[in-house]
Amino acid sequence: MTDGPRMKRVVIAGGGTAGWTVAAALAKTLGPLLDITLVESDEIGTVGVGESTIPTARRFHELVGVDESAFVAATKASFKLGILFEDWEQVGASYFHSFGITGRSNWLADFHHVWLHAREHGLATDFGDYCLEHRAALAGKFLGGKDAPLNYAYHLDATAYGRFLRRHAEALGVVRREGKIARVKLKPDDGFIEAIELESGEAIAGELFIDCTGFRGLLIEEALETGFEDWNHWLTTDRALAVQTEAVGSPPPFTRASAHHAGWRWRIPLQDRVGNGLVYDSEFLSDDEAHAIAAERIEGRFVTEPRIIRFRTGMRRKAWNRNCVAIGLTGGFVEPLESTSIHLIMIATIRLLQFFPFDGISPALVERYNDVSRRELEHIRDFIILHYHLNRREEPFWRRAAEMDIPPSLEARIGAFRERGHAWQDQDELFRLDSWVQVMLGQGLTPRSSHPFGRMIPDGDLEQSLAALSANIGEGVDRLPAHQDYIRQFAARA
Image 1 (cartoon, rainbow, N blue to C red):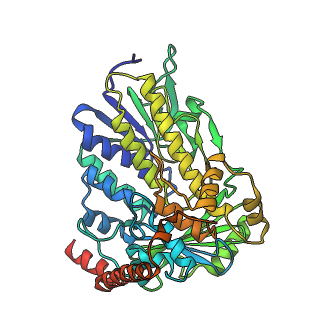
Image 2: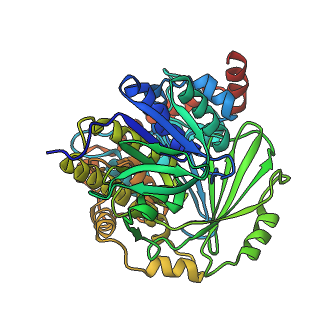
């Protein structure tokens, strides 16, 4: 059973990365079947600090027909193999969360079980030594392209990315309307959105509305009163100071996330500048103190004025309500850590394409869409909480994170890894087993035991096999060009 008319007119409220991502994907895949209008105002700025992606962005670009060389040139992008975490478990400790697969697993036991046994008996080196992306990143090496041996993502200028996607979408037939939204008109019989009215008086009608208006949620929240589920009791950071600086040295192929006494700060190297941010809990750090820390610790001359962004971590109670779908910050936000914001836009867009209601709204499909969206965000939420909860720092902010009650789903994961070294990736879950293992080990969680498979391998054979694996990876890294050299060559080809 479906409700409402056939869907042909799609209205996207809001531009920026979210709005133009949705527009480009709809136009590329379903364009001949739809009339797509995007409404945005030049007077309204975008958050524009989501300057880091994860490898899923590459597959999305292929879906919507984005050429990598054109994208890299337009957004001054550099390449990313993972994130270096500094001072998270305790001051002075660091670890690397890479995008690669570590070691070689089999159906009986994952690689980290073998490594845990070997490490305990002095037969193995550091866990990251068995991952190509890990070694390449810290060596400053990189090689991209379709046949590249590396799993990689991008650092990019988010504002330029929005403009790039706009050109791409408009070339595919998306119509842009300039103006501020003054009112959302609802149908009196069923409460569905009938049209959005601009300050100019123009009314833009549609059958399906995509809300990309940011944290405010002009359609999904202010008009439809969907409700918001707040996760601030688990993820208490609520502000970020963002500033761009001149580049200092060659850009490394990774993001840097450095903890401080009330949160953490990011450093994202682009081709010609660096994106910086200070994420913090306003209960433990004032805005003035955040400015002082930024001035003291951020390298390079400021090329923009530092600005404070206030946010709430959580999600809409329904990502799809009636004939409105919330995508991007409008639908939910799970902290800047681990660079999931752009991915969530892309995966929500793909899900919309799969569930597109051509024949009218299907309550069953809407329920399924919302269920998958919720689980996806909850999995990411748990992964982010993990970074804060597993720590041995002494400051009040960090002690509270270590001692707080955590979601039962995360408690079960930590317990399984602590007791038996068991980790997993569920269906509809973003972060792979490798990611969970790298972060749990990096945050100081050492399993009490592991799968006995490693004990079945003679010590000499195990040591020799691990040494050969590490040596092969080292030789592979040696053959890669320097990240900066690859960017220059790539730019020349582009």
